Amino acid sequence: MELPLRGSLYLAAGALAAWLAASPPAEAKTITAVMHSDLRIIDPGFTTAFITRDHGYMVYDTLLAMDENFKVQPQMADWKVSDDKLTYTFTLRDGLKWHDGTAVTAEDCVASLKRWGGNDVMGQKLMDFTASLEATDAETVTLKLKELYGLVLESIGKPSSYVPFMMPKRLAETLAGQQIKEQIGSGPFKFVQAEFQPGVKAVYEKNKDYVPRKEPPSWTAGGKVVRVDRVEWITMADAQTAANALQSGDIDFVEAPPFDILPVLAANSDIKVETLNKFGFRRVGE
Image (cartoon, rainbow, N blue to C red):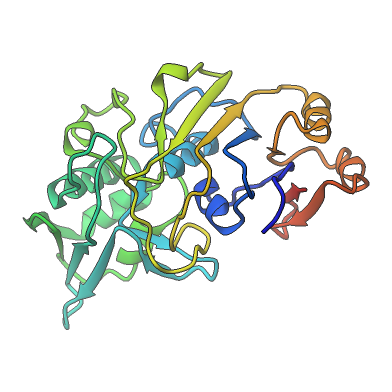
């Protein structure tokens, strides 16, 4: 097991929760991160800002998810496709609860998909091909197509804005053009509303009721086993200040630091620089 991390982390799909599951800092109870941007809007269905998407992956979960090989995998639900490929049946897995303690239902998921389908371009296209989308029982979502469409699973499992995050029906039915009033998901972390300072600080606490999948974590798919109690995103507008805080141990990682600072961080024996994305984004850890 690694020592507590200090470093820069680029989250290719905002999956900080998944990264913590894959590379948990030993004995660390709180992870302090300086992200690529400050968080102001916390409704992931209201903006395509990457920082809000990243926030979404902390708090919410998805019916399907995409692994590191770009293959769609079950997440909150498994699926079956009819022989004529016009009917998709999604069955929720056991143990799913919202952060307020209530059970996740198929009606919640239908409402969430409809909200997403009204905002997202790929979702809108899926809805154009959809004849019906309904909860056929408490754990089953049934999507019927008007005609064949080959991107059903890819649409629902896609890893970036807008992500089809699942939320309670009462929130998903928020009027178009308005932001949801609560941050209630079923994901691995709970959002601490009382400590949120827009543009300054966002705090997440471990969701002790979260039941992870049994598969190993892979990008946005697989089991998200959280081994820390708390994650804090803090804003440091100056990159050098963040780098200094990283080296002194005051913070645990910085997301996507400027490249001119990377040689200094790489020279520090307590910090590991790791390339996660060949297009140039890096992770640095102790």
